[in-house]
Amino acid sequence: MLISAAAAALRQVFSPPMRAILLKSLGLTLGLLIVVWFGLTRLIQWFQSSHHIAADYPILDTIAFFLAGAGLFVALAYIMPAVSILVAGFFLDDAAAIVEQTDFPNDPPGRPLPWGQALLYALRFAGLALAVNLVALILIFVPGVNLVAFFGANTYLLAREYFEAAASRFRPLAEAQAMRRHFSVRTLAGGAMLAGLMVVPIVNLIVPLFGIALMVHLHKGLSRKALLEAPAAERLR
Image (cartoon, rainbow, N blue to C red; front, side):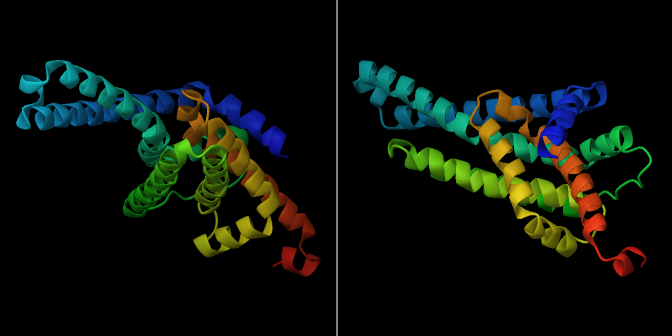
């Protein structure tokens, strides 16, 4: 089920309707990162000039600015997935609707979250993703621990957030959470796939749209499985 869902999700990500959302999301993500980069580099220059580093030690000033810039590049690479999740979070309902309409045209359409709730969801998800990646950044000098912590935390986080985003379009959030826990092996396997993509530069930028497409397919498959496994009396209700 997971492999077929992943193949369908990958096909969807590069389809014309989803490609438009992807390009819009990537443009906003890169624009936001450029603004952050510009602001932080200006802040470093202000700090150096206010402490007269450039005037007193011009060579040290150049080296310090170069090292700070390189450090910012590494830091931004770590927070890039969180920024892309924040930006793409505003398009998840649109992406889920595209997958539902094209791959499940005979099923009832899902209900998008209210705008305010969708905004809070995107901010919460991005905040959690940022926290996970900052912890991984702090642990970067601890061999092995960094990757294990990053992969484990992202597996759970991505499985939970994307599956519940897809499932809550069709059922109350509490029911979506219960369903995720009931099928935890399958949902965590999907989260592990997404977490693996998160460590690949550039590729990690498609994770939000690939993730929601994957979980839409996974939710549809698990919903049918749950219906088949339910007692006959419950299916007739």
